[in-house]
Length: 569
Image 1: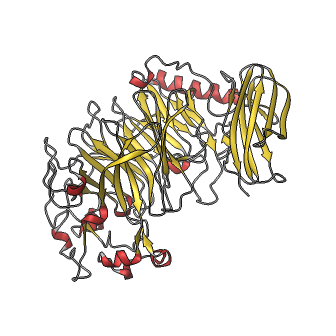
Image 2: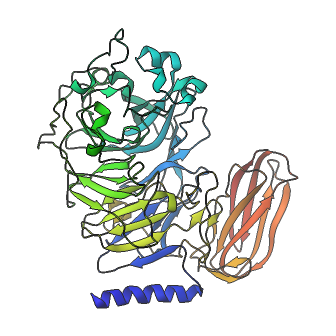
Image 3: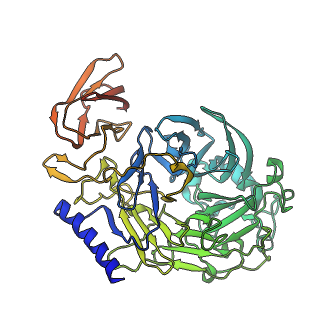
């Protein structure tokens, strides 16, 4: 034990000595005796790239082609492709977790499939999940007018002002898409929250009833607090192939809902059908029994949580559900929690009308007690159980990744070194997001860690390269020993009036970086000089250039690459 601690201390000391200053980003702890052997995938929220890193924090692969930031989740598929959601500027906004587009890139960073799912009446958001048959289930908001809400039995005195101001609500629904390569897809299944409402406000409506007698239905009064337009605020979707069921993290209710996926779309609209005979009604719900009038705050266990997922077969706690419990309303501290649902081996759940659903409490909880190292995140974030029993955690708003053992020991600690401008130089602190303080600009929605023998890695070159963070060598320059020439996507994009372009050289080269318009005319020469091997950042201020599409080209030695950017004034 003492030897292990000594090794960790030496690693941190050597890295600190390398940069000659306090570490602010990257790896802080890498306990080689306890850490899970694998690669961690993450996509910084404020930028467009996706990284796969080893436990030392070195890049083993990356995807940089997408021009859009994540919206919000990303996954590495078994075939080595990257499946990512994208944040678009759609016509419908939830006010959190916007998406609207899904992209799939192969290992070589070429786009192989995309689908836009955003109109004036619906929009994909937050999370998706690839099913075993290749279809994709995703969270979607749909527009319901103020009049439709009143017709459904909602009590307008319970609305937050924005519903009357916008004249709409945005409840959630689930869509299953069968992709059509190389773009688009077909909707093959749907489930809508709106089809399973109950209310005790307006006796003239068909969904009027005694709420506590129907835990399988969704109370239109929510959890008895004032309702926002983005009412359910679902933020994760997971699938259990053994039961053919879907788990939904419902932040608006501080609950997890489990629904039957074996239904047809018609059955999913009803209260009968499917393997469980309940149609689209909730098979199970847990976390806040006050949401179905069967408990008080003393029974509440979830507090506006994110990322409720089943523990995979083969991992300790298989079949349990884990989540990042953000903690709003209980003293503002976050935990990672695990509970064992009240389900039999056939996938049938126990819910008794008028009673809080079992269990009464969690099976396992992790709360970071390290002084000065808060794990609190008021939103986003996630947790995932690994095969060795460790749990990898993303405290999203501060870009903090932790891997902890079942005993609560920190085996790995990493701070995301990417903000809205690109890779952060070691010694610099991630800046505060002035639009959402105290959230930082290195925020990350969620992370996943894949084992060394994951199918995606078979036959791939996973030679460790540079660290994600940059290391200072001289004023205005950074050096992180790049392994190849690379031109990264500018950020922000679209932009007005300035944007940042990052590029890397693995050998000393004469560098020329220029900007061209659609007619091929050079409008700016950003670099034209000899540069030593290293990583560089250049800002282009387009204050005196008209709006439009522009191309920037990097030429270094025999390497040439061009990327597109959009100036919007």
